[in-house]
Length: 261
Length: 323
Image (cartoon, rainbow over all chains, first blue to last red):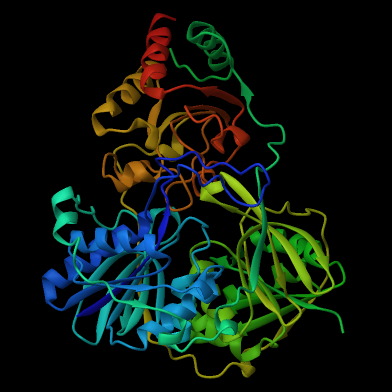
């Protein structure tokens, strides 16, 4: 099975405190630690496991700048066979739809049976996979947390729906799936693994190579600012020494029935 | 002609989702002069019941009755909607597992811009909509602008708009089933596998000590169990703990896990994403302990404590044991 995984380089929220910059135009990007989007990493692991079961190849693709190449290399160190970087100054302000258009143009240049994305990334929109499927006119399922291969025509997928329940579907190939965290346990990538793929050539394609004009990648949804939401009432913050905090908290917990003795 | 806004209403067991009431308010906030229509898809008596329920909230309800939609697979619903919606429709869809499946592709097929997970509508200036959404799990918000003159598909976060309990539209149901063509798609629904019941049913717990990413390591879970034992509480958790397989899925609180309604909820090292908070009902007394003073959980908690749970929880356990 020829599998494509679309990945994104994002600020790592477990390593950074995300803050708005002083002019409210962006988040504070100085000293941010970046990594591969968490959901995408599960998608790559899943692709590698499917390939190891049924054969084929795994290609990782990203829309980004030169620094996004390190994300492709990381996923190749995990076990992806190929990486493709889609990079162009024209892509800089791309919104979700523009990213899907760029990916679609690149996908048309290859042949894939299964296309995976992460269920969402840093902006929480969860849009690119579904758009891409519609552009390619293939079936789509989101929030996938089980994939069972059946044959080269179809697969069985489980989606995570409300209440921890799972919706099982059979889907024709090719199709696009967005992958939910927890579907597997992504393997650890050591420094040695990264070194091994350090010199592998990663082809880059720009707008010209993909036959995309400026109009095709112009954002339709424009971000105007960043701000910290009004906290409203918010929590009553307990302050003081740990001893003082615990004393106050104990009073509150007792009053609210939080301690059964 | 006034703008046409369509609210897609999800339903289950013949009952409309809470977003049916919320979207009636959201649509008015988007454009007070818009002509607002609710759309329901499904089949049979269950669908009729939903359509009649929704007609109390919207002047017009479009009903799509098709045997193939007994289980509304997103690819099929999308196909049905593309067949009946006007090109310049502004479509509201709930931002949950069905909306995430259906809506992005709908925007492509209607050739409309897509705005995901909107929590508020700020203004409408001519054809330009200014909407509020969040990024980085709710740590920051943004205003986004989008020209919706030619239509738009917008997913709206469940719970973001306050339902108007007194709304009474006395609307009528229009049957659009005949305008929907063939609904054959490349995805077939097989079955729903119901979540396994764990050793503890956290939906019945009165006190929950809930643990998130801040616990850092599986071995540290011991301090959470110790505190829960001292308090007479049960242990629940947020998604990353289940993803890491440190606790079973039946202990996960959130829209994709269990919905709980304890008296007291002690959130330990949980940032407080809307998916997590969506699993907490019945207004419990929420205490949040998190080392990040900017964690969104502090916006919704009653009591907040900025502390590292690895140090704070053992001290609290000791105090509870001595009390």
